Length: 380
Ligand SMILES: *[C@@H]1O[C@H](CO)[C@@H](O)[C@H](O)[C@H]1NC(C)=O
Ligand SMILES: *[C@@H]1O[C@H](CO)[C@@H](O)[C@H](O)[C@H]1NC(C)=O
Image (cartoon, rainbow, N blue to C red; front, side, top):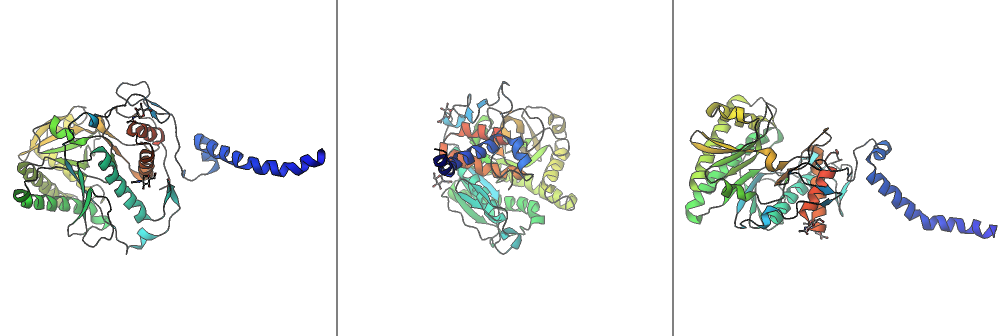
């Protein structure tokens, strides 16, 4: 008997090993503290923590990754004819060695992203995917250097080459220039095409998770809409600029952006390259509409005229949510969230969210996944 157990033991261990191994992986996944002890590096897979904002009104309520109260997103019942052109600036140069250097392997779903350019392109594609599912009659226009080398394979997106200097240190300046060039081209073709698409200029590290087009119907009068938050130094977000797609709206948006460009060049060329446009935008508003400043620490939308342009100011907090990425407390996710903005290392979470959505087709549950895992800084 003793002999046979000794013979069987290795076999038993072999049989049990996959089980023990799986249990220890699960243990790591669900116990973020243990995981920190095991590896001082940023985690290479999602860390789920309890959702914030539970029990608070107007916040998404979750049980794990199951949404309890956001069952019908508004896009399902509102007018699906809200066509919007999302316009973003993006370039990649294969010739740039820092973009092609091999990085630590990051795998999301079945796909590994090993270089900086693979990761940025994945973010762009994910941005396009989310627009495709949240606003199926909208499209994406990617303003880019004519020399850039990436390919787009989605049918709701096109590359739109505009000459310029897209180097990293000049990118925010170039972005405004490209926006203006785009508006000029649209104005030119307007008569021919009778196009009447509203435009949203945006960063590409956002996931559109609901119909954003309804701001154009809810507020009828504005030419340009901007979002603000209660932040003394940078209350305005240059990563979101909505333009009404009428001839007048497009002309007025051009007037506003040209003023921002002038201020950028005259005052902020020395500023940190990633902030210049935001600071210039704020300067323009302060100069022409000083009464707006006190309203930035409130939570109500308002409108005002800036150089003859009717500008709608929307509080970011209504529908824009950013994972706190390590920051201490936060108060959950608004029930009406329409945009999730993935900054810094949570960009990785953007790919994870898409992967989750693609396999479950449940946007509300995906928001719970983001809410539960957005406090961690990821390896990306
Ligand atoms: C969605 O998932 C399927 C496999 O389940 C995969 O073949 C497809 O490429 C994914 N689509 C996107 C856009 O990620
Ligand atoms: C998403 O999941 C929630 C919770 O499991 C469920 O109540 C809801 O009906 C699902 N929505 C869709 C569109 O499948």
